[in-house]
Length: 61
Image 1 (cartoon, rainbow, N blue to C red):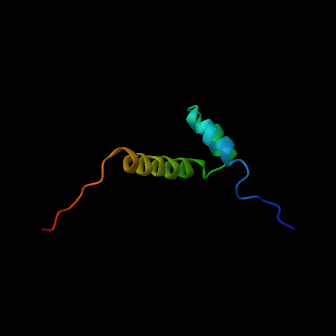
Image 2 (image 1 turned 45 degrees about the horizontal axis):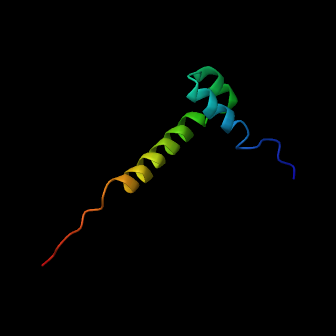
């Protein structure tokens, strides 16, 4: 297709390196690994909160 750079290549390695605490290798694998892990962690938190915290019911009577 003529694309020389894949925007996602190395993202998995970058996140893995971050989870192992190696920021330097993570940065070299892909510079979007740090923000991607932040977004993924936030999404897990929101979905987990929605699953485990009971929904408040409002009574307007």
